[in-house]
Length: 133
Image (cartoon, rainbow, N blue to C red; front, side):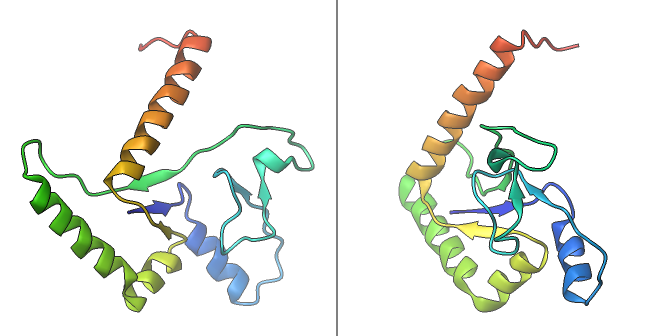
């Protein structure tokens, strides 16, 4: 289980919208899907007025990680406690209030996600001949 949170201050943008501000707000969601707070928002993968970009995904993922060598039973206990805490209404509301989303998943899903992202971004680096400076 992890917490997906915006790279920008989406919470502040949404507070302005919720306060009745009539100023137009344009958001592009860089995840592979729209968010609960911006269900009708433009995703770059959907295209937009000035964009026709596909395959874009950028999320900031916060996760807990135990040091190497911690017994699996302890890791499972910590994961269960975190999952329980993330189900608490006040915790969910607080995360949502800053534009974050909780998404389910355990160690296996996280390992798969990291492997996929490592492969995907490794290909971007190779294709772009990106070198450290």
